[in-house]
Image (cartoon, rainbow, N blue to C red; front, side, top):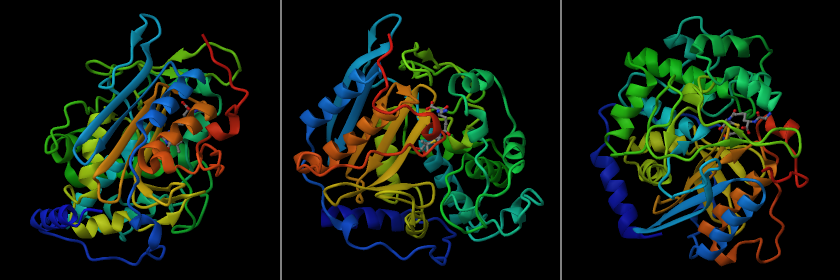
Length: 415
Ligand code: HEL
């Protein structure tokens, strides 16, 4: 860690401290010591390129990554952006980022906390009267996936291609999405164990719109996209096209050896504030580095964002933020995203000085997903990665409903 830079970032966050800073609230889990303090070894760019190539051999038409490391930039891209025209994937191509959107929604809400318009530990129903059937569910429960609200996408995408085609051009209201969740019993009591659910971030979107009086798209733009000069980041819902130069996205069907489905055009209305943003590896690196350096929220809000609850093997979840603990002892902070045709990986170091965003332009492939996770090992563990030292990295069970249907190493390349 570079003391001077960290001090500078801390001073900057103090200078930009909004008028209303929320007090620290009771933590759902004790602060985590040790591993987060390990400085990352040198990145392994050869290893990174090889991971991307492997992803393309496993069925992704293309894969790319961008590493921003203390001011140095490395861009890597292999394979195709468009299978029909055979256009090569370029490192600057835009794409759908899926649940990385959850960090944007969280930042907006934390800014509203900083402005005194929202309290993390207040019941959601205080701001949206009678919305939820359990008045004990708080804003913090939503953002840490501990509300117990059932994930309606489990039902929507039980059958991958059929489910996708049924929603591709649909436009949902938040209320319609929430109603789909409320047909089911809650998965935990409010404040119980982590249980990932898109429903939480649909309600987060409702809160943003209620408290700000604007659409989430307007709030992302005013509060994040414009201040950070993110030129590739768009919320176009319910439009179906990705603006400008982008990679197409190819959904892997459940049935083995069937043709990839071009899923590029869709409303992503089934996700909205839970996952409908478009961005680029550059913008995601700028954004995440800014979040972790405290440039978008008060220091107090960032502390809240990094209060962790256990969330699976070598993982924890804060507020809209994942922490992944890598094989070399380094922890990284960001989010993964899975939206039809696109797998996104966007993580940064504790000090925000090294950021890696990567994309494979396919989804619903456990094999490609597990390969792409290794981009983090190459970027933050370098040659010291546990895989190279013979440590077996856990083959990750995809956390979404893809887990139920995902094919593993028997998955085939489809042409
Ligand atoms: S799932 C996740 C990832 N998140 C969640 C969200 C997102 N994406 C979704 O909820 C989409 C689910 C369907 C995706 C689809 C595919 O792979 O294209 N799969 C199926 O239809 C399977 N039947 C937890 C992985 C995250 O990392 O946060 O993004």
